[in-house]
Length: 169
Image 1 (tube, rainbow, N blue to C red):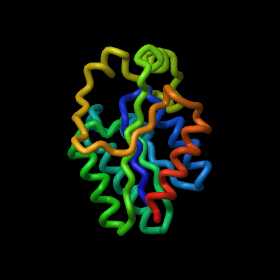
Image 2: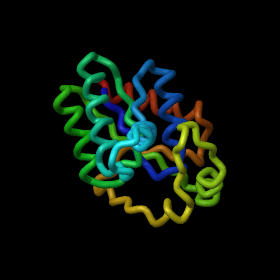
Image 3: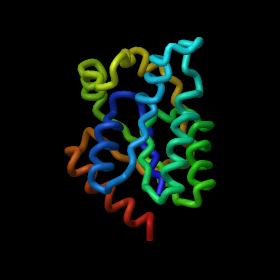
Image 4: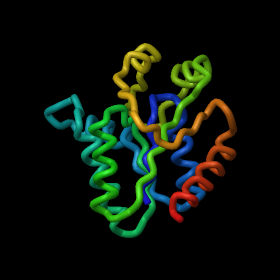
């Protein structure tokens, strides 16, 4: 199964992705880590563009074809990237579950965005202004939703595990 966690920076995607991966023994593919390592490689372009997502799709597909559950962790704010993740699942012949992670408490979201430390060497987190100005296209038909302002990480992961089990049946 491909679990696609999407949402604006600072809503708690990576925290949820890591906790869920530990709970279900899945592979965690984080676009932030991939993009920063592309930047750090010293290549000719400092702008990553679509390269980080393209690498993530490949890593996810490799692991899915090995029979692993993969948790994709990215903003995924554009319809084209959402379609690309779904294509990875289709090529791998596995189900995909799209989950939009939000934080309905705007002040809490801002606090998290402004105070969280980076755990990826060299990664510069976006400012609150950059987050609020970011292009984030409407989903149309809504995916599963998880609001990180409403419960603890453990409670949210338990909820996700139950939702994923229902999707597998």
